[in-house]
Structure formats: C-alpha cells, structure tokens
Length: 592
Ligand SMILES: [Zn+2]
Image: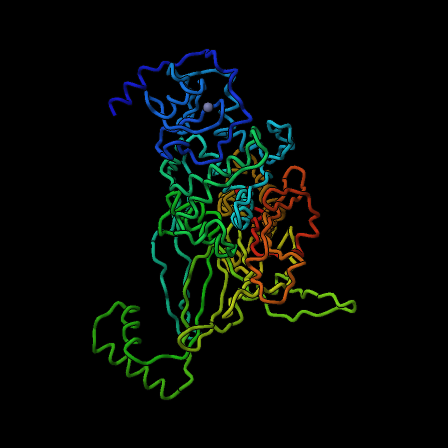
C-alpha cells in the first residue's frame, strides 16, 4: 500500500500533454470488462490505452501498462476505476478539457436537470461513425440467446422511476430516498371462520428516509446501473451497447441458470432479476425496503378454502392463534371441533392471508387452433381483462398440486405504481416446452383496473358539494390534508377561495387520483419464426426470440427493439402481439 501512495504523490496533474493528438477514439470501447489483456488480472488498477484501446494493468515500472507505453510508444491511458487520465511512462495525471468527450462516453453522469429533461428531449445522439441514434432506444448485442436479457433490460430501462434512480447513481455519491417500509418483516396470517368478522389488514408502513450509497451496491446492481446509464447516454462513441458485463454478472449471480447460449423464460427471469436488484441496492426482508419494492410491490389477500382438518395440527394452529399454552383448553377445543365435524362432515375452513407480489402471473386458457378457409391457422384470442378475473375477489379457483383439495380466491388490496403482468405461455410436458400462442389483446392506454382493487381508499366516500359548503375552514383544510393536498391551500387567504379550491379538487382531480388507470410502459413478446411451424418436435422456447416495445415519450412514437434492431411500430400492433411480460404505469404515478 505504501508503494501505491508514493506512486500517487509522485504524479502531478498537468494541464497539457504533448501526446493528446495520438488518441484514436474509434479504437475505444468501454463496454467490456476492465481486465488486463496480458495478465487477465481484474485488479482495480486497469488502464485503457487510448491509442490502441487495449486494457493493461498498471502503472508502475514493469507493469503491463508501463511496458506497453515503452514498447509501443502509446502514451495516454485512462484509469478504468477512477476515470482519471495518465501519461506513461512519464507518469503524470492529465487534466485537459479536450478529454471531456472520452469521460462522457466512458462514464456518463446525469445531473438532476439532465434527468428531468430526458423525457422532453427529441434530439438524436451521433456516434463517432456519424450514425444517428435515439438515446434510450439503442440496440443491444445478442451474445448468443441473450435476447431475453436484452428485452427485459429494454423494458426496465423505460420504467421511469427505476431508470432515474440508477441514472442518479452514476457519480457514486450518496443521496436520500423516501421509502414506505413495513414495520414488521414477516407477513401475519389470520384465520377466520366462514362468514366470520375478523379480516386481515394490510401491513402498517412507516415513512423512512434512506441514504442510498451506490458504492455499496452488489456487483450485479452496479452492472445493471452501468447499462441503464449507457443506454440513455447521448454522447456515446458507438450507437449500440454491448451488455457483456451485465450478462456475465447475471450468469455468476444465478449460478449459470441464466447464461449465454441458454434460452430462458422472461416471466421467471424478470422475477429473479428484480429480487436480485432489491437485495443488491440494500433492500431487506421488510416489504417496501428498496426502490424495487416501492415501484413494483402490490398486495393481495388470499382466501384458501379447504375441508376442515381435525388432528394435532389443529391443536397447534389453534395454539398459535390464541397464544395460549393451556393444554386443557386446547383439548376442549379439539373435542368441540371433532363434535362439530361429526355433525357436519362437509365443514369448510377458510384461511385468509395477505401477501406481497412484484408481478402477477395470469393463466391463458387453452384454446384450439382453427384452420381458416384458405388453410391458414387462426390464432385464438382472449382479452386481458378476462384473464384478470382470477383476481376479482369473488370466484374461487382450484389449486393444483396441493396435498388436499384446496380452492383459492385472490383479492387485490393494493396495486403498485408499476404493475408487471406475466402471461403464462409455456407449459412443460414430459418431452419439452409447449407454448400457448393465444393472443391476449389489451389497451395500451387508460387500462382501468379500479374494479379489481378493494383498497380502503375506495370505501371512503368523498364529501358532496353541499357537505363541503357547510364545512369550517379547519374541516376544509383537513379534507385536503386527508388526500395529501395541503400544499394547494398554502397561499389561500379567503374562505371562499378555499371553498372553491376544495370543490374543484373533489370534482376534477380526485376521481383521477382514486381511479386505478394504467398506461403501457413496456411489452416483452416472444415470437417463433413462421418457417419453424407450430407443430413438431421443436422446443418453442428455444426456437423463438424476444423483443420489446417501448414508447419515446416526447414524440409518442412506439419502437420495437429486437437486439440490435430498433424500428418504429404502430401502437395498434402492440396490443395484439404475442405478449409475454407487460409493464404498466399507474397514471397518477408520475405525479407522486
Ligand atoms: Zn496501446
């Protein structure tokens, strides 16, 4: 360590360097892992030679970087961890504004203003070869069946709040984030008798200011953030991005479950990735403890219905519930339950529990394919709202694979700001995967989910205009505060003004705030090339490929991105594509 310190002191920052015109920007590519091209070392002290683009460990005497500078006469280097420029073998740090473009291509940093302006911009970036590209809509290299990772990445890079979070992390400086964290880690299960009154409540949450330290992120989360910042960079040297480092990090973190050369299921992968990112940015077991939970987590009430069991298990469960260890008491209860059972052998028990989700999986009903008059196949359709009936809070569905006959009812109690829907397209039979090709049409804007949510907000009826007119100033202010709108009344002096404000708010803004309307953010599809055919022995998962549809906000233009190919697409085609994973944004989410 002392040697390194001496090395640092020795080199002084110099304004001018005579070798800057030897730099060849077209040779530079910062998408690859910083590893020494000679020793393969991945130490933190890897330098990029800005003359030939190769990476070397450095920079003291006899290091590969030093020897390269002497042998090849290549003198300008970039430290790939610190982002500083150095001249070798003379060994001094270079500070020169003419290197800013390299700095920006290497490690883009976004100010708050950059982030705010991003969705209003229409201008194109231009790479070193004169190719125009739209920042945020850049092609990603396919490293051999990594199209699922690419499509998922494109989708998540367009979840505004997630993107902004990772753009903010670029300079490695800590910042604060407000999270609503659950007060307890484990989800409580409550039981109730049929028609009983005890209902389960969603968990209590606490507002908490969390300090985000990007340098403490997991390697995977760091690579993910790097990718997001590269994809939105308007100062790139090349118009595409190579996801090599992220794919490598995913392969390591998943123990090669998701790696190069293996086709994967998008629904399963996005669930895994979000879980990794949640923990990678400091999330804990508590619900709401990371940006991932804050954006994607919703809650559902699950009612499980099954034949009542009378055995020791019941005694234990009863004990749990009552918190009592009085054995006589339990014995009496078991006896009573047995008696009840004898009297009514069809006794049904209902358990209610609350659980959190990051995505909802929807089953697509099996429908036969028909041939039309010309012999072509007619692909069946089933609209998305029909699939969502599973969560209507009314109907019970059979649970497959449970140890005894069980039925479940799902009632959505809270929808997240970003709702991920996964259409379960693949089924494994004994030989390989089977794909359900049914088209699931959906609206790409104003998708109304109000009727699926039974949250407390809905039950609280807003006051009528007459009721408002009779309110006191304090009541009016309380009313606004109840809906988190106190700020509206800050400059109001007259009561009449306040009255008008409240009436306008209840009549115009509140319905939108309370409604659960969603717009599409991203649509990941899985398509099989027509020539492969739908029947036969091929594995549809392996034969098909993924693409992603995302919208350019300021021009309202939708794009279809498949690996390196980025092209415009008409929105009408998106709602009838072979969707696999859909991400919707709550309409009021952007104002939160
Ligand atoms: Zn070189």
